[in-house]
Length: 276
Picture 1 (cartoon, rainbow, N blue to C red):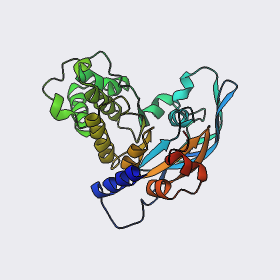
Picture 2 (picture 1 turned 135 degrees about the vertical axis):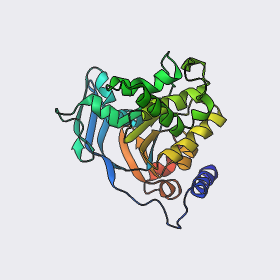
Picture 3 (picture 1 turned 60 degrees about the vertical axis):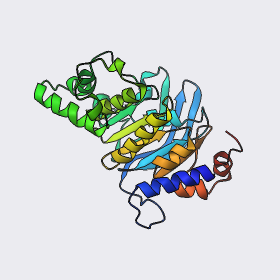
Picture 4 (picture 1 turned 180 degrees about the vertical axis):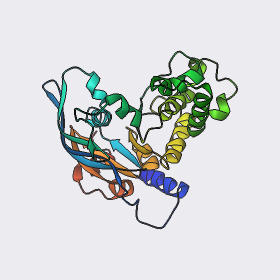
C-alpha cells in the first residue's frame, strides 16, 4: 500500500495540482451498458456497466482471467475476429452503439486504436510502419505521409531517436523503441481513443518509465484505456481505475480513492494482496 500511495503522490506531483480531491469526471467518451460477453458457451463478462471519460486515463486491474482484456477488446470489436463470440448489451462511443449493424468496423478501429502487450512492428521500415494505417485508408501523397509519420513519432516520443534512420528496419529497434513505434503507428490514423493491453509488461524499467511518461502526455489529446497487472503502474498513470474479478466489474472510480479507500471489500482485499 505504501508503494501505491507513493505512486499516486508521484503522479499528482507530475501533473497540474489544483488542490482538488481527485480528477473531475469529464464528458463520457465510451459507455458500456449491461454488457455480457461470451466465448462460445463460456460467459466471460457479466453485466458490465461503466463509463470511460474523455481525455483521461482509465486503468483496468484485476487477476489473470478476470475479463479485463476481454472488456478492452470489446471497445473496438477486436473480439469479432474470434470465432463463436457474441454479446448482449451495448457499447457506446460518443452515444452511438459500436455493435450496430451499420457501423463500419474499419472506421471504428481507426477511431479506437490499440497497442498490444507484445510489440508487433511489421517487417518493414520505420517509416512504412507508421505510414501503414494512413495508406490503408487511402493516403498516397508522400509529403502528407511524411508529415503524419513525423507528427506521430514526435507524439510517441521516438522522433529524435529515429529521425535519421526512417528507412531502417523497425525490427532493429530495441523493445522499448518498438513499443513506442507501435504507439506511433496507432496514432497515425488520428484516433480519438487509444486502448493499451499491458503495453509495458515485457519492457525493462527504463523503457517502462518512458511509456508511462508518454501515457501521461497523450491523455491531453486522447482518451486512454489501459490494462495492467501492475497496481503501482495503475496508480502512477491513471485518473480512474476499474477493478474486475471473475468477469464482473466490482468497483470503478477515482484512482486515488479506489486505492486508498475503496467501497468494496473485494477491492480492498485485492489491492492489499490478500488474493489475486
